[in-house]
Image 1 (cartoon, rainbow, N blue to C red):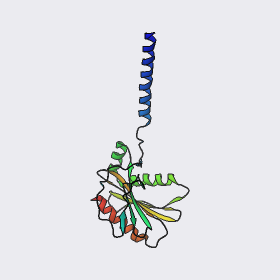
Image 2 (tube, helix red, strand yellow; image 1 turned 135 degrees about the vertical axis):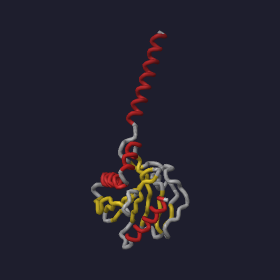
Image 3 (cartoon, rainbow, N blue to C red; image 1 turned 90 degrees about the vertical axis):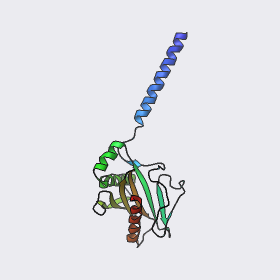
Image 4 (cartoon, one colour; image 1 turned 30 degrees about the vertical axis):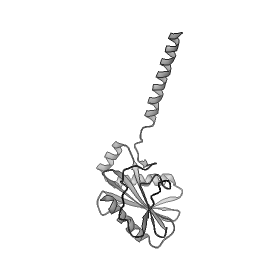
Length: 186
């Protein structure tokens, strides 16, 4: 009797160990970048000199997947910073290239999310000729969205400009976005 109960305990232990190994193997990080679901400490939250008329939204319950969220004074646009999550080998390979490769991946992820509502209006291109940051533009339901993908020593990030309605001042909004990028790259 005791021999059978020892065997049963042994079988249960082996089954539990195999289940744990299976779970760990199946839950490994995917090699392609994905959006962070929760706030990570990758960008230190500190008072930054934002462009005039922009305010930080500090309530993480409104946007838990963003590192930073800014809204302009008339609520016509929002800027968000989101970390692109990826495994170490992908991060290393992308750092050897430049931010434009990560921008292409970011663009493909955006299109995959809502392929019927989004179309590319400008493919990724380097900003100021360096490989630290690249931008692209897509159209979503008639509204232009500009994304700057950049990397720093902490990882790869998207700085996305999201106008909430049609606006004549898209050029000014992109200048403000560039100012925020410069602050984040310091």
